[in-house]
Amino acid sequence: MNHRVVGLQFHFEPQSDNVREMVVNDFPYIKGSVFNQTKADILKTPVPAENKTVMFHILDYITATSNR
Image (cartoon, rainbow, N blue to C red):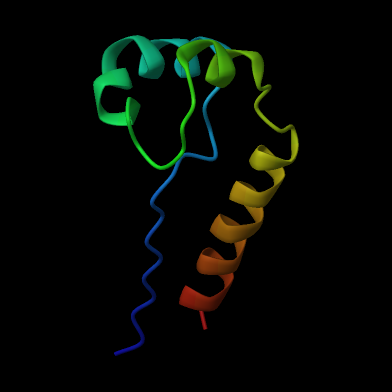
């Protein structure tokens, strides 16, 4: 068998609205963490445009190698 597994511990795909929802709903998990970020810090940081490209590269790689 030729299984491929990728585990991601973060999200490549969120857009600004998604980040805002995550901050509103999940900030208690972040508050007091080693990241030391406020809600405002998180919200003022733009989601990198490269995230979508990286996600598609990973998915393309998985698809290509699983078809071998």
